[in-house]
Length: 104
Image (cartoon, rainbow, N blue to C red):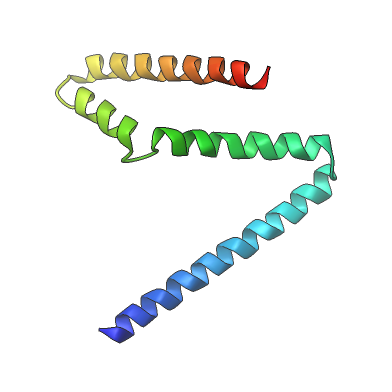
């Protein structure tokens, strides 16, 4: 029992450490390519903001995902495609307008 837990702990710790090192190396390359300044900041914001939006709406198995799946499941393929398209367009417009309000 404890050896399985220990193996899992070691594996997860190693993978997390490897991910952190890879992210640090990525940041070094990005800083070398853009330099430190407004261009680098703009790239960072463009990289980070979509992740925050995904966290806000819950991502996979979040509240938005569960609601859409519950609505689409009983529909046929054509109707579910239309519903999914409408939801996607409305969310895109909502986030675009919120972005305009926040940043300007």
